Every structure is written in structure tokens, then in C-alpha cells.
Length: 307
Image 1 (cartoon, rainbow, N blue to C red):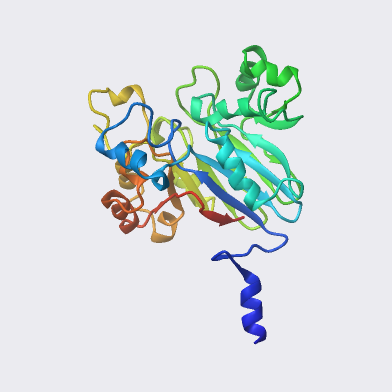
Image 2 (image 1 turned 90 degrees about the vertical axis):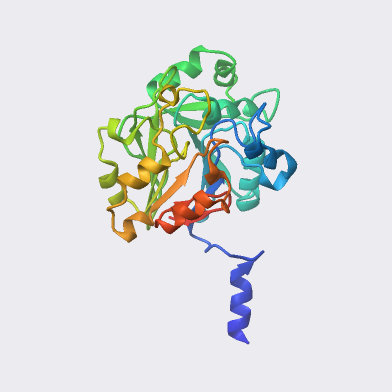
């Protein structure tokens, strides 16, 4: 009877309850910047998203919740920030948990435009720490409407420097890493997210692994989980478009690159940031099953990782 009572306490809503002092990473969205389905896309692969609301996918975002410190952090401020913050509120309720920071990777629409919801026309927040690299900081300070968020104190810009760890508390350390990408307005970074027991690598956008001055295989070896750019599944995925203009490592390229990794290393890799054309947007697709059969993982909203 006591064992049954303990099991009931540990279970809630069909999920394992978290320990009171745990640190957990949660996936709040998995799609490329414009979400799924995308504007003006009514082809068969998008139509499923219009026909079935449960098939909708939010833009890529993560949350980290430190239950011991009663703090929560957001990675990326996406166009879907309203729904994603509601999800985070369910995991770590406002009033009990303070939003102690938002970390941004770069200045493309799916990664920072949700900041507008912090402004006077919406939530009207005060002094929310927003962590950015130097060019990104200058961009937000000098260009409207973002500059108004700074001027009115809705957000407080926090400095990041390449490869310099930021200790958020005694158990949580974030390290930005510059990666090559289309840096029209800002730098682009990935993050290493270090908790008390494990590390996560988060790189939602990069041009090609070969262009990075870091060996991605070695980077994977140094962490416990790696959420990696999977914007496109294969070349030719977007008809009548030169895909070299929007370079990303195709999933097929990444799987070939990582094919010789031991099974335990492959299991660390979680593909994320799917364009609406990418069949990985559907966990039941043949492409998703191919990725899983090869020993890798596919991100989904609700995925939780213990840190």
C-alpha cells in the first residue's frame, strides 16, 4: 500500500512528477522561424496543419526550470511566445517562479520577434533580463520598435561574450558559442546549457557543420544531449528555390556525418528546428522513423530533459 501511495505521489497527469530541487529543460517548440503550417502554404504537406489544429507546430524554443531556486529561463522569444509562455506557466507558475532571463541566439524572425509581447501594448513587463551578444545588443538599442522596450525598461539587456560562461545561480551555467550563419543584423550563437548533473548543446541555426571552427563531433562528446539544426531534411526540398541561399546542414548530411559515432553518442543527438517542408515535423512520418532507426532522436513539444 505504501508503494502504491508513493507511486501516486510521483505521478501526475500521466507524467513523472519532478523532484523539488530538480533542474529541467523543456522543449516548447520545434519548427523553423515561421512555424507550421506556414503563411500561404496550402500544399499537401501544409494542409494537414490547417485541417488539424493538433498538427500545429510552434517555432523552436526551450525553457529551463530550476525548481530548487524557483527560477525559469526562456531560450528564444518566438512569434509563438504567448502559447509557449502559457506552457511554461503550467510547468512553473508565475508568482511561484520568476522569469529570470531570456537567451536569444540571433536576429532572425523566429528567434526574437516575440519580444514585442513584453512591450506596453501587451504584457508591459519590467526589467526582464534579455541575454545577447554585442551586435545584437546594439541592434536592439538602436532600432525600433525594440529600442522602445529598452527605453521603457520592459527588458534589461545583459551582455554575453563568446565562450564566456554565465553563472545564473549555483547550479546553472550558460555558455554562448558563435556559429556561422546569415548574420545580417546580429551574431549567431548556440548555447551550452549546464545543469548540476548534465549538459545540453543547443544549436538551432548554423550554415554547415564544416564551416564551424569547432568539431561538432567533439562538441557532442562533451555534452549529454545535443539539440541540433535540422531545418531541411534533404536538398531539393523547396521547389524552385536555390537552397544554397539558405544554407543549413541537411538532416541527410548530418546523419552521414554522424554515421560512425557509437550508438551512445548518436542517442545524444536530437534534431530540431524543422521547416514546414521537412517531414520530421510529423513524428509518424517515414523520415522520422528513418532517423529513429539510425539511432538519432527527433524533438517534439513537451520533451523534457533532466539537467
